[in-house]
Image (cartoon, rainbow, N blue to C red; front, side, top):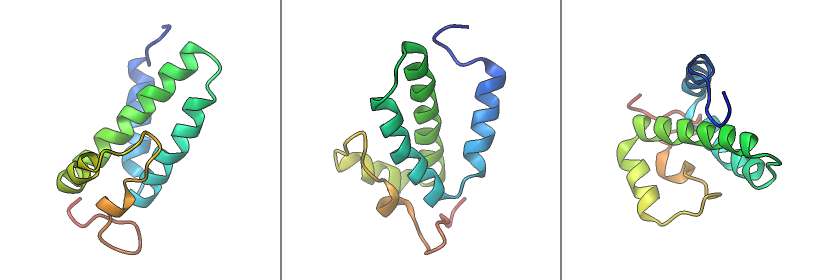
Length: 96
């Protein structure tokens, strides 16, 4: 399947993303940008784009208000959403 993530792969990725705490998820978001800008193939870029979409969906699910505040700050693709999303020093968001 070229250019798309297979359903089983997408489910596995979604499950792995859900297991990250919010601080880890924010770091994964930032690190994934570096991977995007160094992607060598269209397929690699598509996979990274899918991964970043899962990150964004999970960030929004965990903290819709913080996520909206981050988006309203006109963030760059490499920006850190963490200051808008974390409630405690351990990287946990309170209303999970």
